[in-house]
Picture (cartoon, rainbow, N blue to C red):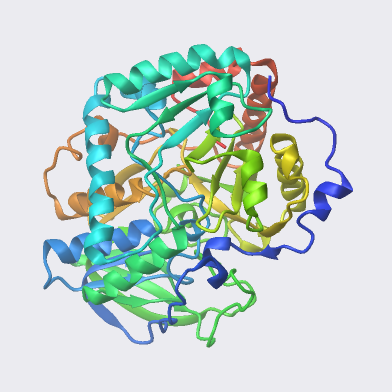
Length: 509
């Protein structure tokens, strides 16, 4: 059974983050992220060989791959807010090799392809780290591995089964009983763990995004920020994009919360120029499916459910406070419940504590005004106090949220629209720090018509079922979330979730 209390959070829980900054720690200069100059909106009609829509990890990697393939290819990237300021600057920084949201999930859905998908994922992960070294991007990489934490003593079977599967796929893994796991991290909720030491690292998400942006500019990519693509239309041999730009000098000015996706709340979007491109890569993540966002690809929109994830970050721990929790090996960690927490140390010994709630806004809104969700922050603080009672004197300095591009198969999906001239890679479901590099490569290969091992796979060639339309979508998501919570409390999945498992459907936190 999960250890989290059913009682409401207390005033003390809320007091611990009362003075915190609303905005991603990773985007705060206090975290060590370089301050990148703003790039002007697009202000004139343009033509290009390749238009990339979205300046997060997928879009930046797509632009970099395209220039590496052909340095003479003209690449134009348009970002509605600032590059890296949506999911790419708000995640936990867990850079893991899996393309299938974990090997257990991959084994259940793609058993015949899993060895090849793991090979591709591990190669992509190694290539990412090599690229960062080659481009001189200091993303504070820590190759410490990741531990899946068991919250229930009955999870020992999962630990052994997971270890066996990982070893069969060539991973270096270590199983931990309760005593060994608590030697890695001193917490009363820990009852065992599985330490995967292959293809699992930690990064600073903001430094990674800023570094990729700088590398793209150095490679000759034209980038315009505060420029929203509102429509795409196949025309002649290419695609015409209609653009609306934010012409204000700074966009929204709240620290750490610049405009993201298609949202320009409080700032009028003016009619802008048009872009004519031979090919287009859509890399706008959750905003391709968000309510109020431009409908650039209806078949994609129906397969994304933008779900909000939130996190807290503590003040830097003192050496004495660090001694209370151990964690000498600095691994990334997450528990193995359906509604799970992920947690890690930062370079200056803060604890990032996130996850659990998966907040669905009716219609799938990605509006940044949803970022301040006190019920979730209170619950996170309450659970942190249960996990680390010895840190009762620690306060939180940052709180933030962001929309995840959740897909029904828990992993990214790919395809083309507009007579094959527009490709997409979307639906990473919260595990995209490394997988976006792979997704960008696949999207480019699809739109350029290149044959590759990945594009021939069933994983790339199939798509998840669409989510139902409203109001059924909201009702269905609410039911799944309640069943997931009930399964965690009982320690087993009920018949409804098992049916979804057989159908290859679901929703992840």
